[in-house]
Length: 175
Image (cartoon, rainbow, N blue to C red; front, side):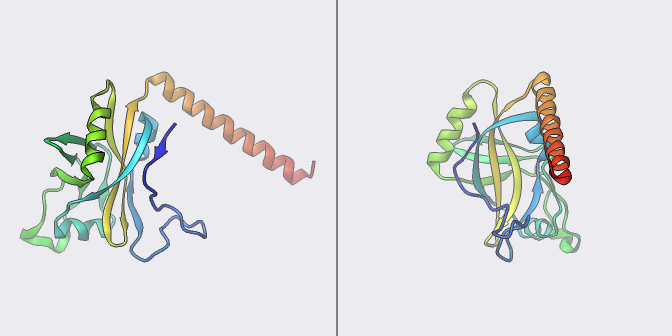
């Protein structure tokens, strides 16, 4: 059962996809991660970024496809998060796939270290977003799915869709 340790903004009171306040918005999501992994726990971490990275993120130019997080020397880092170059950034631009430090409490890092040392667990970024002007990332403690798990998940999703469709049709007919 996945459990959230921090609340993360993905819906406002009206049900919109963006956060409620100006500046709160999702930049990128890792939809593939939910297909390839069982996410057991999620937590929110800040990102240490350079100026041109922030500007590029605000333009929505980020990809989480191959990104992963690692705990090294008591600090957490995010690898392979691709933040595209900022066009007006000229010589001050950043390396698009450099390792980026994650801002977490020491207690959270120790807990993550213990979880990752268990067999088969990894840290994957699920989404990058802005909250109150700060760049944040939701990290998932996940275990890789086997091929039959993926097929089972797809079958469950298809069955749920068929049930919703049947109920909707039944409701329209007035049964």
